[in-house]
Length: 145
Image (cartoon, rainbow, N blue to C red; front, side, top):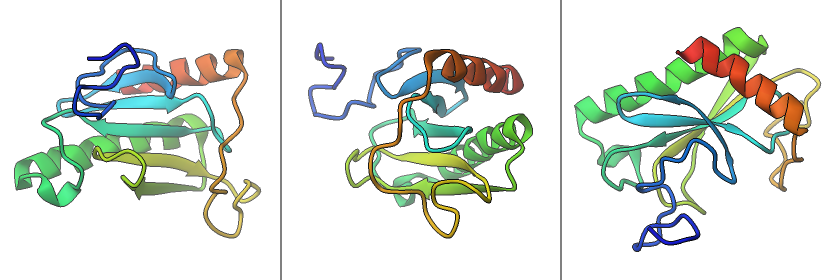
């Protein structure tokens, strides 16, 4: 691993299992994923669930067993977000355009949030205050353990 947290092949998610990254705090480690509570967010209750097997960019590249485990763990994180933050809706977004490693954004949605009539804005989300970010991460972690 390089000093900047990326693997030699260029994927920063492969092999980087730190508890705290520039993105967020790890709040859970499942059998095949790690979940990170975001440092920047438009809403309370935003995490990324990252595949921790071999390097895979697409969910279709998982075996049926791997796919089942991955999606079950995404839903585990979503349930904890729902129970912790009580949003009326949760969005799931599996991209990979910027980061070519399988991961899913799990985002609480509220009627009055920044994207009330559609998706959240595409520009960079605001940095949460250190205290609220760590407090919310700890609450979510408690539900996941």
